[in-house]
Length: 117
Image (cartoon, rainbow, N blue to C red; front, side, top):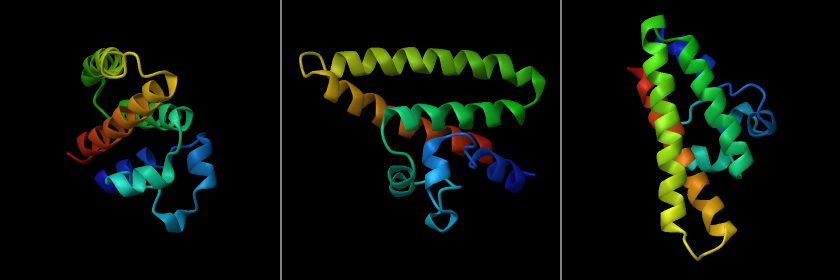
């Protein structure tokens, strides 16, 4: 079950990053920073990957866990945005994008680990 869940989670269907990354690059398992960096590029790709992982995770948790998971994701995204706004104040849009991308990649890894449990 967990293997099937992981396979479904990491297909990242519909994202440009997943479509462009060959299977031999190991882009189906986003468990380490090197793989995430190679398979998920800019903020747009990272957001698409994060959304795809979250959708797959929601499909595979018990119905009673879906609302709390959605709430946690909304709260996490608000935290991410506020944290990056604080960290990059006065540094410009590029710094903000880098911060958002980095925290989103970390969240992809975190959600991946939740799915494995």
